[in-house]
Amino acid sequence: MAEGRLSWDEYVAKYGHLRPGTYEIGSSCYAGNPEDYLRPMVRRLDRPATGNSEGAAPWSVRTSNRVSDQLERLDLGVDLGGFERFLRTAIEGRELGKFEVTKNLSAALEALAEFGEAHGISREDISHVRIRDLFELRAARTESVSRTLRRLVGAGREASYVTQATCLPSQIFSEFDLVCFEQCRATPNFVTQKRVRALVDVLLPKAGPIQSLSGKIALAPNADPGFDWIFSNDIAGLVTMYGGANSHMAVRAAELNLPAAIGVGETLFNEIGEAKVIELDCGSRQIRPVFQQGNGEPGCTRLFRHA
Image (cartoon, rainbow, N blue to C red):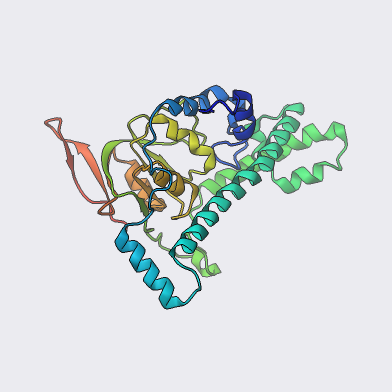
């Protein structure tokens, strides 16, 4: 786009299948609202890049030497350059794989939404119907499909209420884990060594670009590639409930040199969400809540423990 080799229509066609919540039929895909989802990203092309420059050394000399020593000790038959190329290729391949898979997934969701609309069923309603039941409807008589769909929507909605009211452990190893468990605190993956203090804004389950995040630390339960639109909002930082060191948001935060805490876990995420202002200190691997004192000055109250 910046060099004029890609037109707006080609840009929308290439990235329009992305949506917040990759499997969420209730979320609009980027192509359904390109002006709000994609246009802000194009506007950022006029700004200088803030991430690591192309070809910059990924590690310090000290780290490079230590990695080289370990590679030699393990006798893997690969030097530092080969190891770095492997890491780059693996990360790029993983991102490309997810990008391609979501194209067919998005097309399937849109086809399903059109099917529901033809029978007077909204996106929200059809999201409550099990995929197995939808497959079985292919053999049903045309005149009974609409009636059956409405019945399935009602049953699915009731089941969703039960599901949302049920608390489960983050990891299940046996049936006994469902009887009695304690929510373990996750160890976040911090990106960059930066420290930032800003207002907190929790992304809604079906958040879209209408939610202004400029200058704030965005909190996202599960920020998949469809949440890339948040990076056009000049956010101050990012915190996610789920995700690992190689997750999409960890890769994007590192690319943009954005302070982030990826995969803080459900317990810590909910605690952070209750604060109006937090301090995200990636260098010391700490997240501190900050509240307004009586004199109007912000002050730290306690440390959110993540160990």
